[in-house]
Length: 234
Image 1 (cartoon, rainbow, N blue to C red):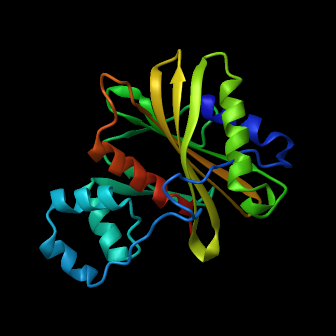
Image 2 (cartoon, rainbow, N blue to C red):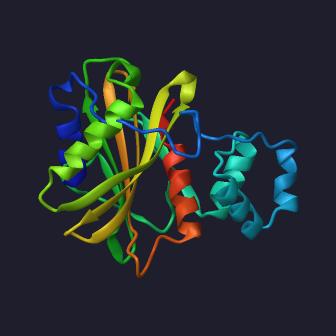
């Protein structure tokens, strides 16, 4: 599987973290933009589904209030998936199907479009935190190098990067990049990684983004919420 292969390439011998993230050109900080929403208990009464999705898309925010986040997940038809054995959790589109595939800890595929998928790989590592592997920029450079070494890759370009705290201050890197491949054409990739309990957790969200059928704003919001929900399970 491509995700497993990429994970093995990036984290060879479990001694080095080899993904990096350049800073987003629209931000001088490596942290994602956040916006505190006051009186979030009123959201269910004052926001329509359309307004909530549009607001989130325009601001590019991760809702900090659990009630607001839950409401958004419900509006986007996302459901919580938790793997207690491996120790991670995330939201997934309720219409996507969980399938078994070699090399993936878990994989979800969109109905009638298996190339659109959400995959997680969990691998043992020697270090205890993501920061010990390297900076986001260092990791993005290595990620791009790994993608470009593939025979199927025509072009790969990192679009954005962020670093956010997870549960109990866990360090999580997020990034987005475009991939042009002879296997499926243009794709949009959203990825996240963290280290917990001496395990590396790598999330890859792959979606077609061809010029004739680009990723639409609503689907982008859905996939971004999946990305932002990836965390260690308590």
